[in-house]
Length: 547
Image 1 (spheres, rainbow, N blue to C red):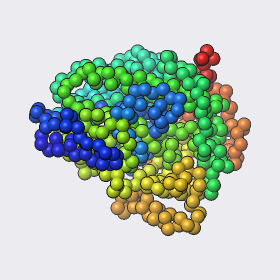
Image 2: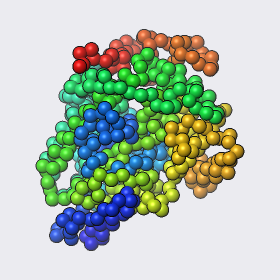
Image 3: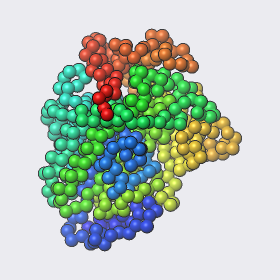
Image 4: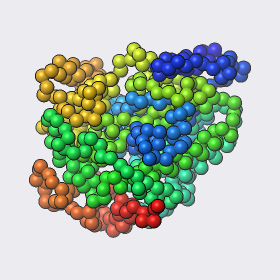
């Protein structure tokens, strides 16, 4: 236990150093333990698609008091990123401490590879009580309990916000291997399962993983939050207009504007991006309520241990940056995520740490806090032990082209504390190079600027060295198609390319969501059932009775 206490004390001291604040370890909270087991409780809250700045404390007009409390009482890592900005690969990286090229879950359709081991296995073996509650989404049709979790509540794929799904069928949850009906709004219901489990805690240390569906598309707020932000004033990001950028502009980026992922035809609708963003923020209020209930439950359960909360998202989200919506791209709003560690009794409060951290760092951080050895296969590191004054870690980003959303090419990038170099694989297109110190909005592509040629050469070499894994042959996966993909476009939106006419659609097309379903004899009947329900959500208009 002496080693565990030293680890705990080291984490606190190094985090203070990393945050570059004049913090000291309070004698009242950092006294020598009197019990044999001083390991902390650990709570991980994972939100889906939350932007790094989607907090009232960071964005004017948002009402997130409990998420803001995390910031005011915790340590916010302001340079937190994902190694792949896509749900399943990112979640697999969080669970495994590995990048996508190594854990093997390369898109949202991939099944979980044989032998995939979440860090929960090691915690469980070390004597932690472990619970997973929420969205797993690795192997879309598989909601069964996963290794290392003593308690399990999940659902297939993306799950549903409401108890009746888009086909009019009951939404189901898998609770410890048994299917039960979902009875309420999903964010509230997952929170209820989490707080009920907390009420059963004994003196043993526990790890609770709460994995929200919110705020994933189609944004669907709880009834109490509908219309909450109808009058919120929003500004378009600086890179929203094509003429705002200087230097070579990728062709794929220009073409993507008239697509599911572009602001010209976003999600095949003519809804203003600002209205979509307001609905997104309203859905986030359910997560804020959930955080408040978790705080209350944790404070009341009191098993005499420090409780550490790690709050993050599986990827960012774009609302007009570079003319895009959604994620996948290597631009800042897509890859940057919130990362907050809340542990007032252990770490300094209300601080910002500039060290670069990634989703692959969560698993080793949790194991280190629990006093468990970090496996050699982990590519991440304990983010609480990194000194920001000497750290020179770079982010390596990878995304593999998906047939069902073909707008974004395979993308590889390296991001240092100053520069970002992006390379697109398998397409005839330009690379991108940004100086983030002078150009944080990524408006000036320096790829052809002779003054940056030496920097470009080095970044290309560093990226290849990282991706090729010490000379091993890299490979791009070939995944199975199950339909033509989200390929529709609108003739109301300007485009620099002549798309096939049979892909042309308008916002009222009966089959505009057909890419969600696999091809087959029952597809037409499924579309008849699903489209009206999705239209009610995606095409929702702002509330007229909002003050």
